[in-house]
Length: 296
Image (tube, rainbow, N blue to C red):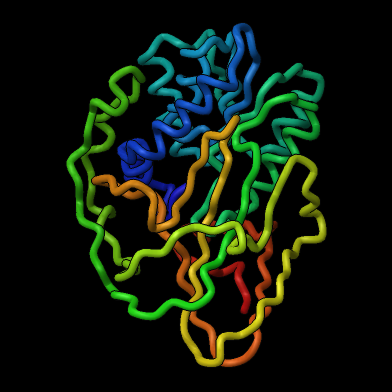
């Protein structure tokens, strides 16, 4: 996932141009997929993960995409690659796919369902629902953690993330039509940049999700001892995609020309902190208006 507007193709340009992100997913898919697998790619976007699954031996991929404009781009790419017999596009959400394909045998579910603070919409809930319904033995991501660095000072605000030329070498093996990526008018945005180095530690984990994590009550809640003065907390994810392939948006991640993720920086005031996150929040546009489902 990406913090931005999915009604144009620009976010997908930024996502596939982030070599750290793309290479981590390819490494995990190369370890996960077995010859002859039937795979679900949930939230397929440009189709890059579907192509990776086919490359590493999948015989069939169901590419699920609920955004109609993105689905047109996805179909275009699949047709251009002559993969229509191997990659089947389904326009809709997870529930509608299950309803129409209840008894299909699925071996693996893969999804780029991760938001800046994991839960930008209900994709993670839907991802687990697909894994559970089809009783798959393998999944990407495999384990997900939402983490918090407790007290930030020395933040530099309003640092501009500038336009970066597209590096076609990153996707040279995959038939994505880069002509659709020429419009970069929405690519510039402001974000927080940390002035000091911070490392990820296990004690920073707020919520650790795994195979059977129950999100049905619609609320994740954690109380954290306060820090004596107002400031900021940083929320970030730390994910095991598959078999010790780790992926994070922590500031220590490799510096790439294009960052498709940023951390969530949330202000707080004196006193103890009660963090509440609604993992079922799914209002359109939540990705572009951060923290609508976070309460402190």
